[in-house]
Image 1: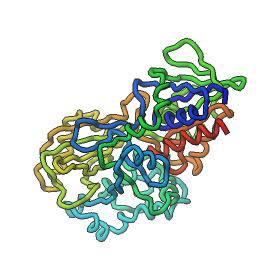
Image 2: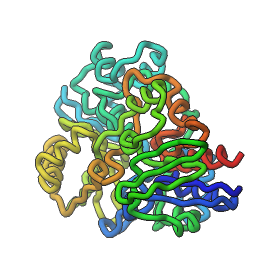
Image 3: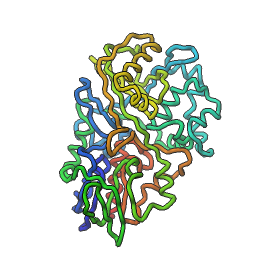
Image 4: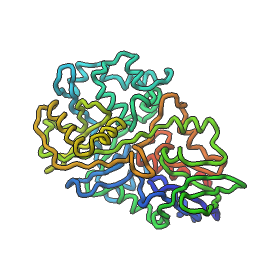
Length: 416
């Protein structure tokens, strides 16, 4: 194929797309706005004596090429923890096991089933749905975790209908896998995307795309020259897509869906403690905070590590009081609710919300979005501009392997 193709963005989707096109003999350029590749994939080195990821970490089922690539790289994959071991019960004012919670509060523990059953109802924000149907909002911390942080979202904005449809469409018996040895996702990228990495042109932020006379003309923020290509694949986060000037402008249907895809500021918060405190094996635990965050245990044999996925309100709290004070505030709450005496050894906040050219966690559907919104936004535009990234996968959005698959799909659409 003799055409010139531009890939915009060197995250997983962009790298996968560029690598595939290069292997097919295409003329490819790869522009990356920042000074690094990988996007929201990034290892956290030196914080712990075990493998930690500052960004995406889970492979959501084994029946995909990315899983096989991880194995070939040397990753030891184990079914990841999805057990919520304990939750703070604000009614009894004590921590109880999640099994006890399910027995005592059946309505609240079965809320996800209700979302699935109500997936064809008129859409509304999750918080509004929960309040309207009479759930006990004393357990707001459960809903923050399940429907807020788990989706990278705010329950005030994410659509109830979209959650029900997502959970219904998700294949049954799908297991989440975690890398349990020294391999990072970065190592997988380095092994399989070598040729794509070699052609990355850093610090090239695309600010406008014009499609004219069967050509794609691109303008950068720091270069007066225009670049012309036969095709372009936009592989940037949805926060950056919304900033792009596209000519001719997107049609109203596509623009509506793009504007109703949220991507809140947030990040991953790591705390090293002086000792372990969970009395039995559990993965997720649910203290009651006044913000949307989801916490899990990631301790090694010798170190006590907890990690929090912070949604918008938790991120705003970090910005308000600072990283050190936030770590202390989290541990103080755990001490009070779990009746322990923990001390903070060290902490780290991977702030994706303020990372240039990313500016958020991952995409989620806001209330009012169309049921087929992913198909609408991922469709080629003017048969010249294509799209890839976690936001564009119809099922496994917000995942690494979903981003990978969307990049391959876009590349195949161009050369078919």
